[in-house]
Length: 420
Image (tube, rainbow, N blue to C red; front, side):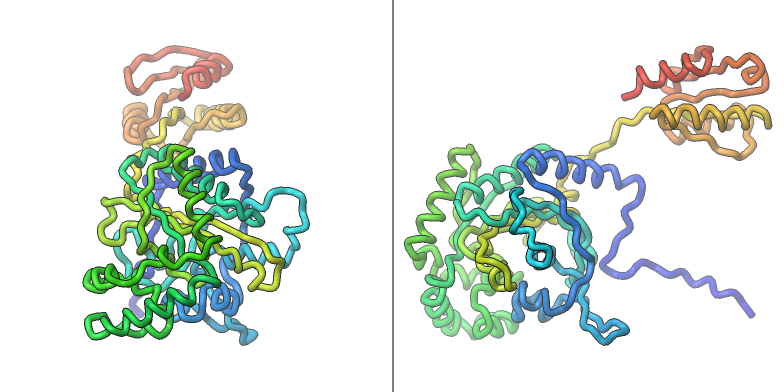
């Protein structure tokens, strides 16, 4: 029988995050934790799959996510489960299930992790993709809307992304949207023959989603449709005006866009996006807004909420390279007794917070130093039979070639004092 050596590739729409790439991910994740916690947010982690009903109810049964993009399956018990396409419904479920709304601390949460949508893979978009989310529950003041945008802006600036634009709008509420929907639907019907098949379907389902169409001709046609900003009730109008005023107080530059909508049914009032011209036609890498009715809709208390989601892959594609500055030592051992001593030294250094690498292939000194150079080690610590007898070792600085003799404690002090 011949051995089957057929290669098994990764699944289309997924991507390995390799060691040489992970530095940017770690930098982003580190800054998220640091900055968000300055604003009083705390991390929450929810399961990667939930009951399908949760996402149908939260995201909207007619949304593209539910109708086209969800990874849904039956488990062995016959239950319909779905890999999470977004995070918010899971967090709302968790708040209600664990009655977090009864706790005294602020309901400000952040989280990051993989999401799953059967979407067409393209630049910065995958079928398993990753998001950072931040959400606030229980605050209805438009000042928190502005603070959330300001926090996102600080994160993006800290990560070195300078080429971006912030666009804002209001999508109204259940009081003012019905009149707008009626006029919008009428106008869309008049343009139906020029719209794509998907947008024709959206006319009867949710005409707001025509604004989100990826086809340029549909987007151009939609520019002639009524603007929701002209239909806002007094409450929504005041909220949006205050939101914009607070952004100005924060010194945040923004552009009102009357055609900005969010593709999910639960949004109310404030909506916003961060966009970059470097991402092409689908140029948003961060988006969010209010969803004041969602907690109540899920059976919880009447609790306003606002949040945003940041696409990690899309943001990384426009982030500057971040080569981490790391100092570490390669331990080059020559002989059996030197290998044992090298193992003891590596344990000693690691327990004192110094990164070191010892490899167990038999190499001569030249090959050891060549290996240390290829791996971009900061130092090479040479441990041979003579060094073992004298308890003194040769520490070589790889960049300059300078070499010095030192004992274990002396080596530790040099490594710790000169480490980046």
